[in-house]
Image 1 (cartoon, rainbow, N blue to C red):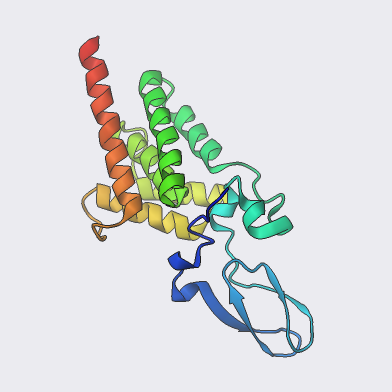
Image 2: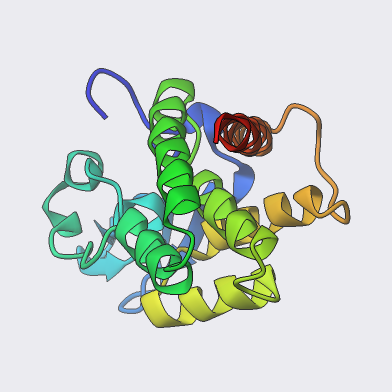
Length: 204
């Protein structure tokens, strides 16, 4: 992002799992990898070693991926997150165009708020769309639907896990702290969508 760091690149948001050691396949020397390292040169034999745990994460869809990860990110975003999810939204909800237009407005706001508050966009946008599809009875099982998208589009596993956690909390069965910014954003934006839809209904 311009003038700031996204949460995936800002070490203040990292956990112990985001740094690990692995042995060089050539000489056995231990190499310390950060989660954002695509390849590193072995300090002993100088071989270039790929990070076995490298996860593109949001770089699979973020417009600023190359700024974060350099030329190694080129060609990895065959289709944006938003395009993937909105294609599913349009495909499954052709008869409720007015509501779909409303949820797309909410998605626009979600993207702006995620950027401003340094929140991963994937779980927020995915949770909004999937929750909408479930409410409109256009999908039966949000978790199974997300698994299908993950298989088809190779979505980042960590973001899929976070999305499922948000959806479980929305359904009343999940756990999470009250200070979870992604969940709070989704909850507020969905409430805003419902309010706008009720107001629009009264005006007719």
